[in-house]
Amino acid sequence: MQLIDMKNTVKTKDSSLVSPVEQDEYPYGLRIQLDNDTLKKLGLTELPAIDSEHKLVALVCVVGLSQNESAGDGEPYRSVSLQIEQMALMPAKEEDDDQSRDPAKAMYPTMLG
Image 1 (cartoon, rainbow, N blue to C red):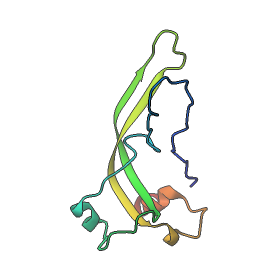
Image 2: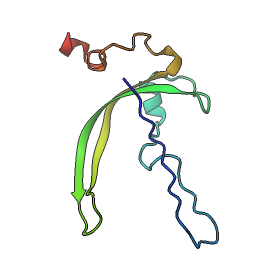
Image 3: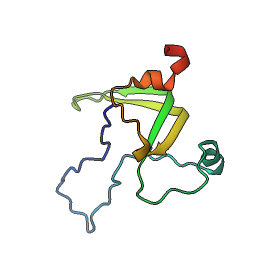
Image 4: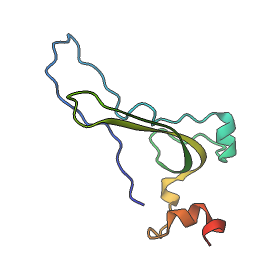
């Protein structure tokens, strides 16, 4: 499974603002906050180190769709809202060595044999 970098691209605009506008590195909504109960459910007894990388596998449900167009704006704006319903989190270094494994079979072994 190939991972896609979701980092915001920087668009340069001529601005007359006195101070530069700070933009988040990643879009709003991609950050997920895990509370105590969630950490316990995931089996994390110790907090991971800042900047440590982990693999996240999630089952999501589409809970909202939106599409709208404006005159002269070209391409329509589209969005999909996802609710994470099930997930697993593990240190990135413990990733399976078999990169050709089918992710669907890994997530649903009893359903897909």
